[in-house]
Length: 271
Image 1: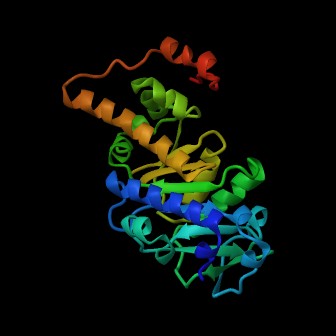
Image 2: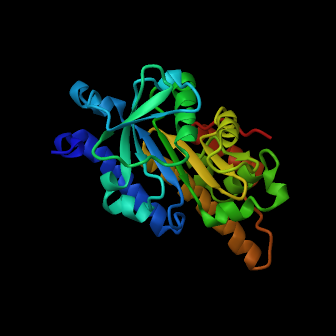
Image 3: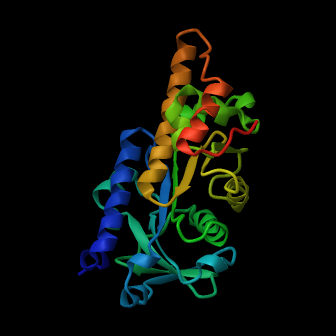
């Protein structure tokens, strides 16, 4: 019996990941093997499951002390989200970090190589664990067409510009993405330079746009990360539809956005 078949709580979490993987594919955000998901599942495994023998051990490019001995479900390298949705354990791996934080073991149920962006994901998890505590467990990266399109415009790469524009398209965006959007200038996908820039942006944001590449969101639940990206995508669609119709959308005013703050207990507007 596999680890997922014997652990109902873990099975439910893997099913949630599979559900979101399906949404990413259905939205057209996961061409071929585009995107990746990692989830901290340490608290879902029994001691015996957490100590399963290593199927394979691999070293990491940096030490990650805050997530030493933690366990993660990660989507596999070269794996398609549509396949993760149908057969998550054939297209993902459960890994365990060494006590040193310098290597990891693949422990179940077969040797599936984790996403090539695993070092970046784990570096973000390490940062979040050290700074935010234990509740932020998910890193979700995908390729929303409309949001990526906006990062091709130099104006939207300036700090705060795109985030405030997206907030202004519909009230729900200010409510569902209260910390706005961070922007990371182009870096090589999967590189530690990209991870480092993203970690810096995560100090102020839960959603990061990578110039000409994609979007990354962090949160407590995998569906929460999807919802933030989905809501931002709706705002981008409203903006682009208005532009396609030949006009610049007025957007909600600063006063209208500030009116949401006391009602929904949001962080204040920042220019």
